[in-house]
Picture 1: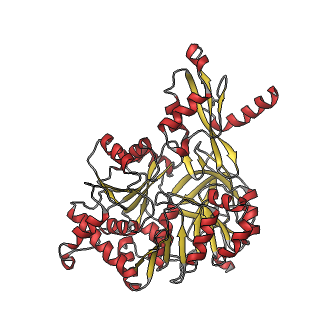
Picture 2: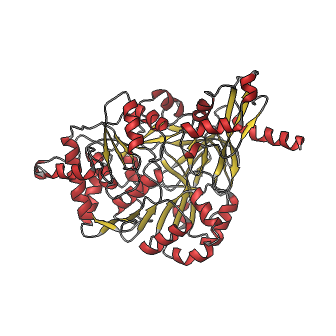
Picture 3: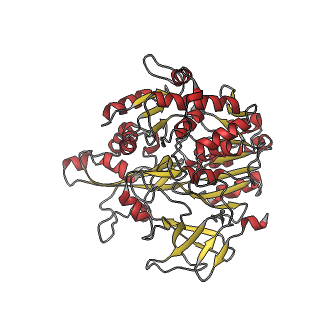
Length: 547
């Protein structure tokens, strides 16, 4: 309904607000408790399907197995506040591990299953998980990481088995050994403000940080009766590392919806096949996948298979306008939406079939203000820094009070997003630019500094800057601008060596698909910060003037 989507503007306070509504859960309710209640309610219904094998779990099975695992965690001497690491794909038992950890008050830190050793070690050194769940496919990588970590942890296989390695079946057996009737679930002292997830994100600056999300924020973010009923079938391709997967998992558990999962990679044909096979209604997706669908030569033939879909919500990075337009034509405006959200607080605004390129209308209970460089509040059609009001206590960045403080206003009421934008007269939010140098390749966040540190180890490299080259399918391709040392080593340095050292040390997502360029100097600010976003423009000028 129109009233649902209204954004109101208070011209005195200069604050934009989404529709107001009450929270559905009290402040001390937790995700694990709600999950058990809902699963018990839907005991006979199929709540999860693992597409590659067709394996199904009913609410009753999820309920029982989550309790067994919660019990097994206690037998492993894990306590409230201990972190559970997950470096695994979407397979059958992932959901239960999540519920079991949350019942015990153990925050979850999910990483991408395909990350390289350096990236995994960097994040886990911050969160220090007591156990890490992984798959057979990435066990070797994680075993190597475990060797390098400065703390004790145990690896547990979430799927498959290897000799001498504990796996999920062992845990389920251990959990069943003693009577569950004596067992207390959900730490009684746990509250809604406690941390449920630690999400890896660039936040607004540089290297990845652990963004904390509370039980309360995820409960109230995912309980959407207007969108989800017990009949809705949900799906998301992303692994748990992405907020979109966390959202879909809890949208299923909190609203009693069936959820389809897979660990197979995206292709337009497989996507259509999945939707048709399971009659999926709601998909949370990313620009990279939508670009592949829009540009697929079979997109018109695949369309009939997408009949059951009533909402395709795309989020995570800027969707190129050409792709957006094609998706409106392909799917129809009423079925396609673009969401702007932040790991720190979840969804901010949503554009459902509205003007191309706009971030849309604010979601319920969201309040935003725009400030100029001097900190003055701005009105409509004026571009400024986007600040978002925190409705709940935010736990900040995990074990990182410095960055937490710089991301909040002095009174702790508003979150500084690092994004710039304006509201038009209709209350639609429009994005301008991002403060940070982080960009995305195929939905992976690329941290320039991480790649630059690797390249700086090459003899002959004086300076290097990583930047993104815009690309319709991948959002950006990663490129390097290199300044050579003024010596023999510098002269011998080749583009192949630069690409090679990156391939050797970092995973696929970080490889230099946008090229290696040798330059005399890098553009910098007066205080010597590299202006990574100016490199492309300068290269274009030079390339055009030399040809």
